[in-house]
Amino acid sequence: METLNDEGQWIVMMGFLVAIGMFMLAIVISQAPLVGQTTAESVIEFPKNEVQDLRGKLVSMTSTLPDDTNRLTLQKRFREDIALLSMSRNNAIAGFGIDPLNNGNYWHENGTYKDIEYTYHQINIYYNNGITKYNENLLLPEKIQR
Amino acid sequence: MVMNDEGQLYTIEGVTAGIIMLVTAFTIFNSGIVYTPGDAHISDMQIQQLGYDALLMMDTPGEMAPLSASPLALMILNKSKINPDTEFVHSFPHYLSLGTGTTDIVDSLEYNATIYHRVTHGGVEKVQSYLFSSSPNSEVSLLTREPAISVTRYVWLPRSPTGYGASEYDNEKQLVLLEVLIWRR
Image 1: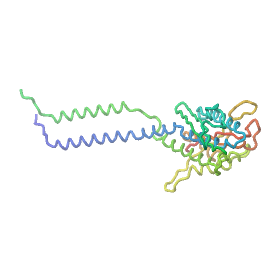
Image 2: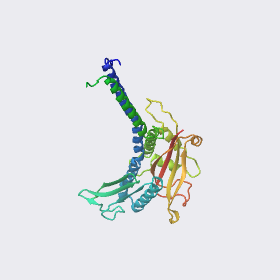
Image 3: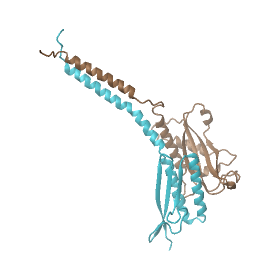
Image 4: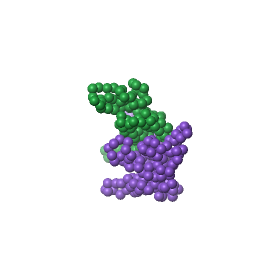
């Protein structure tokens, strides 16, 4: 048997290195659609816009409550609309409570907290669709009339 | 006895080829298979955000006062029970197709909007719904459409739209849920 020709080993080794490098890059590229897919699924699944919508409506509503003569009716209507429609169309349990230190259901004249200038009404917002749970305690200041 | 040290390059080559075959086989049999097209949810996510943003913009009141009726609420109020919608059907697709002008946008989105509202007439609570608006070609495109995605928004109404009886729509301040299905033709 002839002696093995061992010249040109650098060329062979460089060939291996380049081939291995291309293989690694191909693995990275093949992961890209999968990563985009799972990221997009997470974004779709997360109810960011529902929570922002709910929160915006509640902040709007509670800002009008101090001047509203019919505030108990308005609050009740909001709470029951949100609860029923969220449950039936968004598969979510959603709602809110106002001034928990008093009785939690209604806008209380003295608020939850008070300092010299303001009364603070605590709005508890909750949202739960089984995957994402969101709770927020929002303090809404009301200027004390003198 | 002297060890025969010829053929080392052949040995290395053989071992390397074996490893490459093993890695290839491992990669193939270890791959998960995603049956949906790889980028389907990426465009779904973009359409969903587009829809939410359009509804958010339309539901922003022109006045600063909280709980004044937004343009979207006015569109819902202006669509009476018998007449079809004439405002949402123009403005919503327009907002969906708005671009910066730097790229061409393929305007292939169709939609169908439904209002869900709570009725308390007679002491019985129930959810009622009616078709609010739909794009002109939506029925035709139902045959070949892509799967639709749903966007929702609560809209504050100061009263009920005209034409509804007391048992169909509560005529008072309330929140209704606007659900829009958007799909590509």
